[in-house]
Length: 617
Image (cartoon, rainbow, N blue to C red; front, side, top):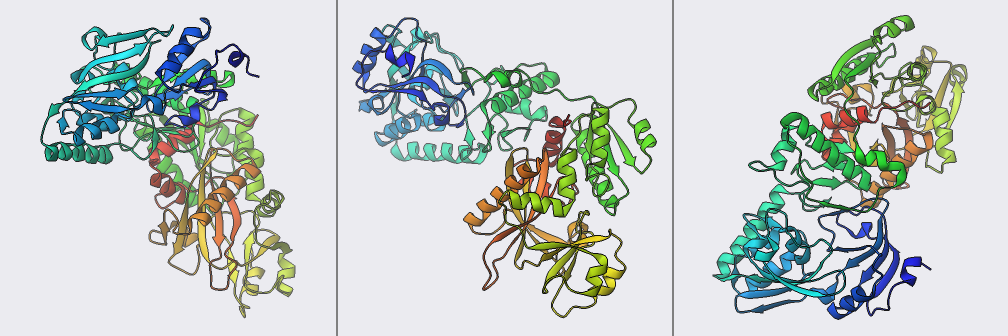
């Protein structure tokens, strides 16, 4: 039994040990509460506070809208008020609202009663208790403009009625003891025209939807506005729009909002917020103050992540070119990424890599703080150059030696995928000589090199197509080929960033299939993002892409290519073709397209890759 619960008095409400309180906040992140108490009513709460041990920590929270619970959770007792504290009563021009009543519900109740002046509450994402404590405001008004008085309980359960003047309310502040628990508040409105009040409510709703990420997992305004300025403007001026850390992102729509894109931890969100504060200070000299309340303790192993965000490395090298058939694509990727890094304020040098290892070593002096690897294909994507970077112990982007080597060698990757239970098409490895003599399987099938990317050398062999044999005689991509059953249907690709799948895109080539020209020529293909497939298929594609990334041990950004057989009479299944550990970063590339769809700009994507560069050893 939870040791703390054993010390607590009996209650009529609910006591829950190790309650997942973080998951109940609007961010949906954070650790548990040691004990969660949901009192039945005010009498239950008064009796509890009067009997609870004096040394037991007690924390009261509202609906969790403007709250970040750290990953280590909250020690002691967390009090959360429920429906027994959510009543709204109206008498003449005053509204008596329970502390758990949502601000917008109070605004609507006032409107129904013909009371104006409280419409601003509909723009505050929280409950009355929290709004009174922090003097919340929106759209030109604050709680202090309408508050008459409030009732609160102190740590011993004693009741206090306090008028608004005694609370000394100011911008996002009150002088009320932070250990007190608000029970209710009295607010005053002004009789007005119901149509005009309704019109104002609609104006506020439309303004919120147009300017704020109201459908995202967020915690409202992150920072207080400094005197004479606005937090969002300073954040935008510091280049933080769309900045990403793990699963946390600065909103593209309103930069004073942090968003949990789906996989964020509390450390991601708080660390991103601290990085925003640092960047704003570096540009403007202003330290932003947190408006979001942060409670609890970080996990011990991520304490350092919460306190500091990796600072920009001053020196970096973008390696590109190489000697594979994908050289031109690599040069294009490298130029685009170098430009993005320069635009973000990094000191960048570019290196055109060739077969000359001593030349590469010389070009890497003085030693950069990290390397952006924009190489594609053999030598740059197969673990070769990654081994050089490992020997030098210079952090680099994308996957490490082993993951790169396995992904590049398609038969090995296929075996890894099969062992991981991922759906792959039937295939065999055949020698060039054997293919000249006979077909390895009934047509249609696909012939491809075992270790090239960008569809280099890929050939679809259709029924009654014999011309391909002459092509095999001239084959220049190695002694062995991978032959796979051709999967009809649609071409899908999934972008993975860190440990989350960003999204899936359907590729519609203008030619017969998604070959090298379709990939890189302007207008060679259409990218449909998100992929217009059934939701269940879309989710399965994301799952396959992420599982493939993990099976190979990839890090950074990767892209999984799939086929979806939705042809008449087809099986309706998805098949994983391969994983690209260093997907293209050109203007027509797929990963930047998918990232843009989820609000991550090209510069932000490249900066995230830089900030997550590392070595394996």
